[in-house]
Image (cartoon, rainbow, N blue to C red; front, side, top):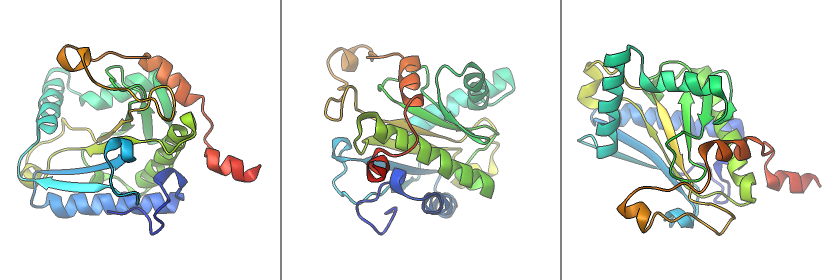
Length: 245
C-alpha cells in the first residue's frame, strides 16, 4: 500500500491529513481482512538498509490463518497479566512510563511513545494509546487525528537524529481477529513497534551478530539515554529548516 502519489514523500514529510488517510486505510484493511483472518499484520520496512527494494514509500499488509509466533507470545503474556493483576499489561505500562517520564520521547492527550526498558535496538520505540484499545479499527476519529500527529512528531525526530531518511521496520499489534472477534480479548492493548538499526551516524548501524545471536542482546546506550536524545531533537524536519534558511 503506497502512502502517497509522490514517490519521494515519506511519512514525516507528509501533512497530517495525508497521514490520517494512511491510518484510515490501515483500519479499513484491518476490518476487511480481519473478518476472515485471525491475524492481520500491517508493517513498514523503510529504507534499503531494512531490505526495502521499492523506494516508493509504502507498507505491507499480510493476513494469515494462524497466529504467528510474536502474536502468540504477546497473547499469552498479556492474558496472564490481566488474570493476575486485573488490568491490561500495556495499559498499566503506559501509565507507569508516563509518570516516570525518563524513557518518554513524545506524548499527547491520547498517545505516548517510549523507548521501552527491554529495547534491543539503539533507538527502538513503542507507540501506545492512553486508553484501553484492542484494535486499530476501535480508534475514534479524534484518536486517529492525534495518532497522525504523534507519528509525524516521532518520525521527524528520527529523521533529525542523523539528518537522513531514517530506516526502520515498524508494525502494529492488536487483538487477533477472525474467530477471535467472538472471544474475550480484553487482555490485549493496541500498540506499534519501531525497530530502527542506526547507531552512531547515518551509515553506522547496529548488527545483531556474534554474542548477540548466540547468547544475549547487548545495548550500546541505555533506553534512558536514547529517549533523552530523541526527546531533545527539534520537531521541525531538517529539510524544512534548510528551506527556511
